[in-house]
Image (cartoon, rainbow, N blue to C red):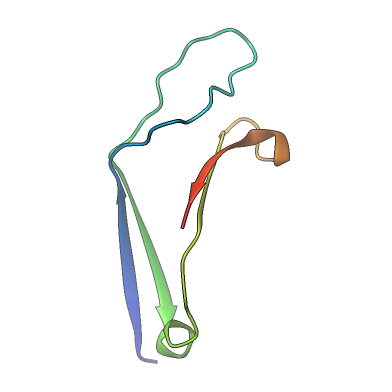
Length: 69
């Protein structure tokens, strides 16, 4: 099966709200690489790609941190 790979490097973000409710002030970790592999048939259907940033401890609607398209 033919396909392609999309590699995204998240370097920095601005305007991200703080989601830690326990009072621990942890810094966000950036410079993380994500790799997505799709069949060629899926690549032809894509018109845009939307990324949602979620808090790792709150993977629910309450854990939403930010998004980009």
